[in-house]
Amino acid sequence: MEQRDRSFARLLLRGVLKNRSSLDWTLERYCSQPLDRMERSSLNVLRLGAFELLHLPDKPAPVIVNEYVNLARSVGHEGMARFTNAVLRRIAESRGETCLPSQEGDPVRDLALRCSHPEWMVARWISRFGAEETETLCRLNNEPPVLCLRINQLKSSTEEVARTFTEAGIAFRVSSYLADCLLIESRLTEAGVNSLIDLPGFSEGWFTIQDEASQLATLAVGPVSGETILDVCAAPGGKTTYLSQLMRGQGRIIAIDRSAKRLHSLRENCQRLGVTNTECYSGDFRHLAGEFLEAAEACLVDAPCSGTGVLRRKPDIRWRRQEKDLVSLADLQFQLLAAAATTVRPGGRVIYSTCSIEWEENTEVVNRFLQEHRDFTREPLTWLPQVMLDEEGCLSCLPHRHKTDGGFAARLVRKPG
Image 1 (cartoon, rainbow, N blue to C red):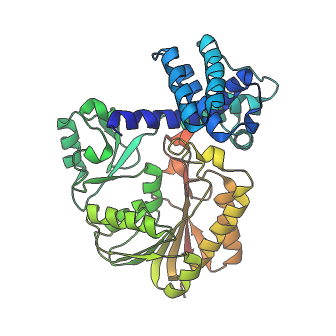
Image 2: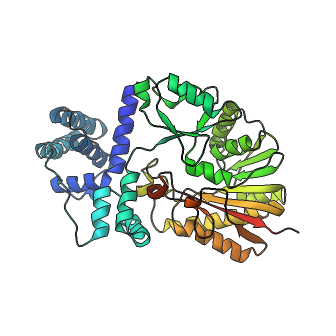
Image 3: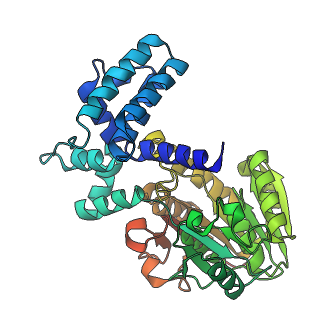
């Protein structure tokens, strides 16, 4: 697709995902059958049409209705097209008048509907943060994500990138937490940049996209030039390439990931950023760990998780995850952490990180590990921003408090000898 069409498709996709609860509530008012009994393709056509009608007011309603009637016909049949026409015309007639009902007696359902999050997620956040903070978090999850760039000191400098961006008319600010991190504030299209790869300096490897929370989790490793470091669940390589930068390209980084395809992306990123001290291995780390017994000074486990800290970047996660998933994920996370313990030498360290803000996946996994591995202790991350540290000294980034992605990191040190 042309860039304009691609951008509009992305707008529609993210718009439906971030407003699904309110869109479904609206559709239920005008559909003659329950939404959960409709064909998925038919329901999604209606969601897309309702989003345009309710959230893109500058586009004429008849044009929108006609487009989605044709779409319904192309992916379904004539009956589906007539049904789509009837529902969307009724929504168009009330355009600008539709408002969500207040659920004053049920704060969880009310917030879940207004901010389009699953009720189980809202309920657990209200119990932890309170209703006011939870609403702030949910609303932030529906805002466009910040474009965050980590400057690659192997090829450039913050000053050089900042000067280049200024000359190109790209507005930015330096991160409040990291000196070599720039947050893009302007719309790139306004500066004549159609995509990220068109940013000046991208192809030269001057920077890479990596959120502040992810960068801080990498700093928790405290890598030293010449060390051997394992990076588990490493693809697509944000933390891997940052480790190499912090090690000044000296030493050995062993990057492991289950997906050979994602490892290909990691290799491409290493090549663009000038990272040369990385070895890649594809497979389940729980089985591969035996090949690296006490082989490293440090092991970073960036574990698979629920992703509740990155909902503004991946809005589909909120609808794909269920609360019961936290139990199975925590078990997998513990297994990866236990495997990592076998790969570091006495005095070495294991760093456990997630992009989740859920207690079960973070503190509880670490506590369970320490109970079963008495030769490890938790080391406070005192060199990271104090405002982001929890009571145990672990990194705990919360989007609504720190304006970063959500994330967690704990540093676990194996006792010497």
